[in-house]
Length: 437
Picture 1 (cartoon, rainbow, N blue to C red):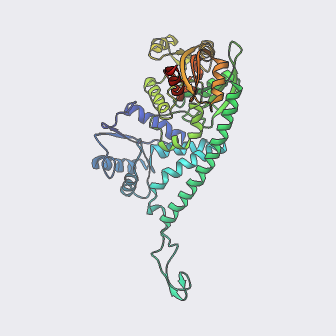
Picture 2: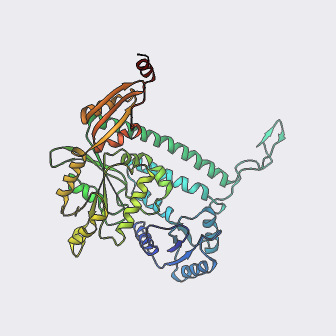
Picture 3: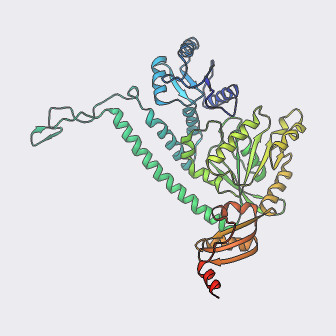
């Protein structure tokens, strides 16, 4: 493993923690770690990412340990990969953190949706990184002689097309096909979300760093048997189950893909259809592994990803999980104040779960927020929803729609985010008529 700390790119977790996480990723992918080294740089080396001296050290370590893979903790550019593979030789493969995560996702995707999303991410990662070393440079056109490329007996010979160009064209075609298929998935999920909103059953999304215990909590609350393992990205495909809250209210609970520091941008783009489930949720339960030495950094990495997918406005409860593994379970209470709306729990044993469910029910069904909105007439469902679920203090009809002022359950705030207003728009025709009168 090779880790690089860039002073120009501050990280939420330390280099040692990041390498420790890379080792767990490698273990999940079925690799054995035989050595590691690290370096601190201001900026990456233009050609080989690491400095020349460190590169010589890596080559020497790979030879001594008979390593056939060198893992980089950072994402490498096409040039970096090409230069490093040339220096390390044909018997050693260079893999960066992004490629490793994509490989793990490919192993753990089981539904058709998940397989499509991972395939798209892999193709988009590979496209700019194709090199001649990965092809046999066969000529697909041109050549000369015979009837090929001749018109009216006159030979027309082009420069030909390398296998590299053929591969690139095929990958682009495949990417286009996968995007079309994923658009169908997205439309299907959108129809499902519309139906769910009509039923008015709130949706709770479990979010958190990978291996924080989301699937364990889902299993405990819903008596399900979702696969659980002590490894990164043990579950990938989202799972939704019904849960009954203490007051008898019903809600839907969704277990989503775990987040991670340096989550590849290709994955965020490819999993847009899945991540929209989070952005459409009424409430988030953020699972935090309280036993991890960098629990705060992991929590910040999750919040950073939530901002990337535009889900930071959704009400959130923090569950500090795995208190059963602490030498002193009361130690979790000491950092509760660092998180708003937090509760200490053990998803495995059920400790603190009643308190968590009460907080969930309060947030979904008892907490109301003051809101002023200007809703277009075309959004009749939102107008009806305000009448049914909220308390209206003032309502005015005007040319642009309906201005409503009142109280609305906190879980519904996200649905009105586009239409918030301070004052109703002035109806100019009515205004002038009043002036004339």
